[in-house]
Length: 326
Image (cartoon, rainbow, N blue to C red; front, side, top):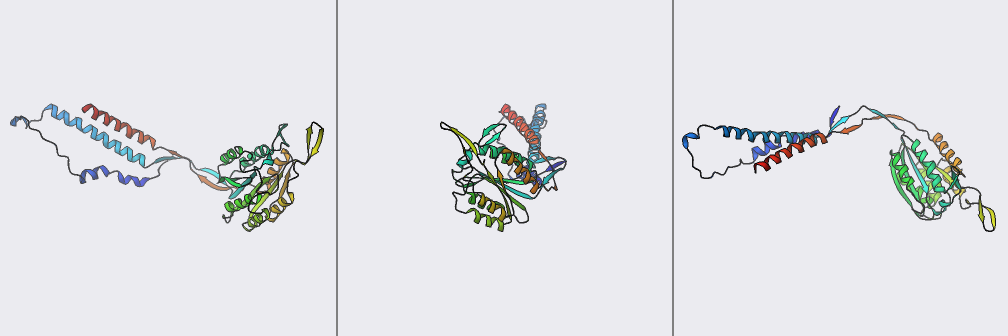
């Protein structure tokens, strides 16, 4: 069906007649000429033809004005109602961009990649599965930034996550500030299920708020936090003097991440490789299932450009006619 978004603009339709009624009539300038009195009483064929020629631009102008008013009403074509899944859950994803996330202790298709690349690869699938959730993205390092506010547009969130680079927010790790920013964005939505998934590979080394204090604020706002500690337990490093085992996750503060999760009703997970990281997100899908409410929307197709184009075409014809007469 056709719908008009701004029907009140129909009130401007009689505006030209109003101007014609209010403004004084145009006075024709008469010049001296030799006239034969008795011939003026009989209209000639040229006068009749001239009168007809003067009327068609007026009719075109009236049609152009009507089409312009029709375009201003913003006509739209409403499609059939489409069901939209809405869960009522707000989910924020916080990703660590500190310098330690460049450690290449993860593998994708048997190729070594850094931790951030692995996190993007797995988290993108998780975001795409969250149909009906409003999703936001926080990137943190020395400081925490809101990269994407809460939105149903999962594609945009995935794109901005893919564009994140190491060191974008600084080289250190401000876990407490990331949680505090999530509380600020999620804590003012009473009645909604609010979840923060925080992924890091280190300990809190920057920021103004301690992680445990931020967790207390989150618990008071009923914000559930799932923490993910990312990084391998051991790694073989080859050098000129031979091979040796190192622990690339020595700086990971698991105790703090466990306390953060437990104090908010969430859970702590350890991701040592890509498979474990993917299983964690699958587990989160089970703990926070999609709850669909039946809501509908109707797609709208704008139609205003059709009458607008016709009005401009008629205006061009009138302008060309005036140029020819001049």
